[in-house]
Amino acid sequence: ISRKGEAFIEGLLDHLPSLLSLSIPTVNSFRRVGPGCWTGHKLGWSTEDKDSPVRVCIDLNTQQASNVELKLSDAAANIYLELAAILAAGMEGIKNGKVLRPMMDDENHALPLPQSLQESLDSLKKDELLLSILGDELSTAYIAVRELEACTETRLEEEVATALNRA
Image 1 (cartoon, helix red, strand yellow):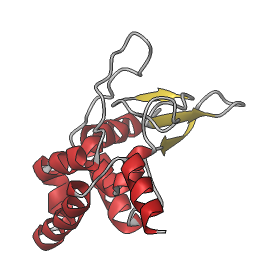
Image 2: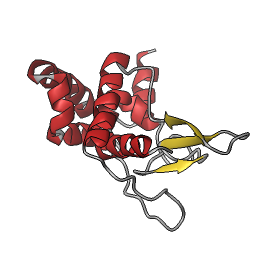
Image 3: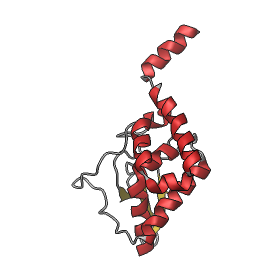
């Protein structure tokens, strides 16, 4: 990985807890994230590890890094907001010359990522970079709408029971 590529990845990792509120923006999105889901649930990166949220893919012919994959993305996301946040986080990493943390492995105990939409929104509220790229009006409205969804979150079993009672 090039030095700039490493800095980009580190910038992405620095903002990943708050970026999740844009890339997996619903209660149901967070239900699909966790151990064994091949989406990544800990803050880190790895090569060819399907359980890592940021995966560096290696070209089999050259044994060089070929691309970087952010696995925590969902079709419910507004792709324009998500891409703006990814680019801003990565470019901040490059601008500040960030050094890429060690790769996740069994001995590196990475911090857990937010486990709910509300946890991620709490991170977003503190993330000056992402709030600045959204702007005051959009960030306020976005957080308000997503918090409304987060506060009405119920367990999946309760949702199913409620739906079946209506039928």
